[in-house]
Image: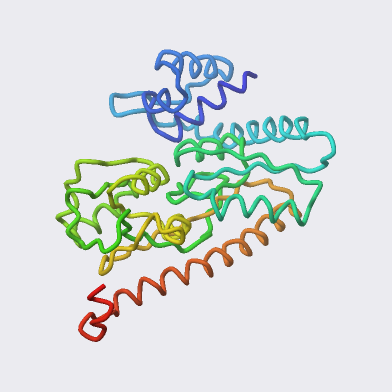
Length: 309
């Protein structure tokens, strides 16, 4: 059976739409329809009920879905096993959103290989939808995401407690940032919280979908944006970015998603090392948040010598 047909079936099942599936698979809608039709012809049953509202699994489609996931899992395991480089005997594939690779993702790779030198690690990068698709298809076995989705065969666990902090590329910035603020898409929860706390910053003339891109943008021009504290720390330490006093902070936790079927010893190693790395990252972050709290408690009337500077 063509594995592409299986991937297409699962994408339509996950999105509930032939149109959405073609966007994620980067093929035309007619190609998606043809693949599903070929699969239905092979099985002798209709797998979806099609309508203007989308596509819903038939009873036969629901029965086939766990088998499709198993087929894809076996295929990816075989492909990855064959692809293990010379000199290595084990392999694991992980993915993460761009902002989670520095400090957390890279440290996780280092920690796993330090404990298991024979382990080959393959890494994938992408937005949340792409990484989730790789998990479902079995391309990767674990992933770090800010916005995970619940899917069959996947387990979601907390990985890191982060916070979004307001930073500017110039010292002494106040909350009067309308002209320099860059809006970043950190999800609907953040958008709503920002609108409640700082409504004057919601009509920014500059917006970005990728947080890591926004941080580099802000660091190299007169601008300000909300950035995860963990990610911003290196620029804050170097003086390229500065915390904005009195700005509200927003929780922004990261999660790890595990795919079923990871060998027990590899799963135990991956979980143990990720916990260790996350603890180290959170310790580094504590110093940054303590600095922010000190700024919030600062009273210029009690320190005129600092105010005059």
